[in-house]
Structures are given as C-alpha cells and as structure tokens.
Length: 104
Image (cartoon, rainbow, N blue to C red; front, side, top):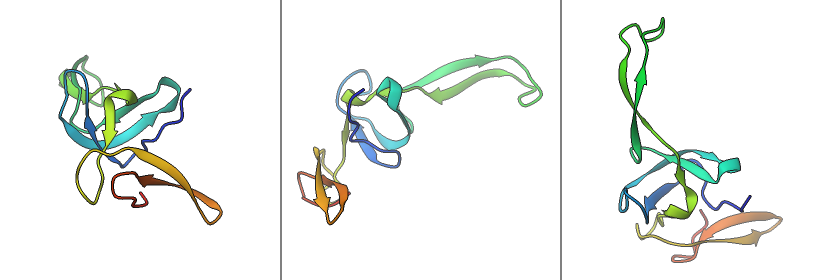
C-alpha cells in the first residue's frame, strides 16, 4: 500500500485515462485499493431491480473509483495542478502545496 497524498474533500484533476482533464471533489478514498471516488468523474450505469427502496428500478448513474496515480491535486491558491509535500509544523505533520508552499 502506498502513502496517499489525496484526502476526501480535496479538489483534483484527472491527468490520465478516458476522463483526462475532468475536475471534481474527492468523495471518498479507498486506501486498500489505492483508488478514489471523484464527484462527476468516471460515471457508470448500474442496472437495478425494483425493490422496496426503489420500486421503479431501472438504470442508475453513479461514480466508479479511479486510481490515485491518475489524479493530481489542484492548488487552492493558483487553481493549477500541483505536487503535494509533507513538513513538520510544530509537532504535527502537515501537507503543503509545492507550487505555492501553502498548507493544505
């Protein structure tokens, strides 16, 4: 398992694959699979049977996980893609943007 530099709530851009160039907010991170679910990116159609929750059934669109190597964090200050670093801030370890040197 690799050290993930992306957390839920971050704004990311897809840098590789079918959805290259798309941006969205990270909804959740799947650490054991090194994947993340990004809002509005990698939408798949899921066929559902009628149930008590969904009496109509039908086709539901939902987000599928995308590998974190295909994602890059967007710097909140410059709104451009940036790399993430770690540094000590007192006794806490914090993430910072390498482009603007701002704590994330």
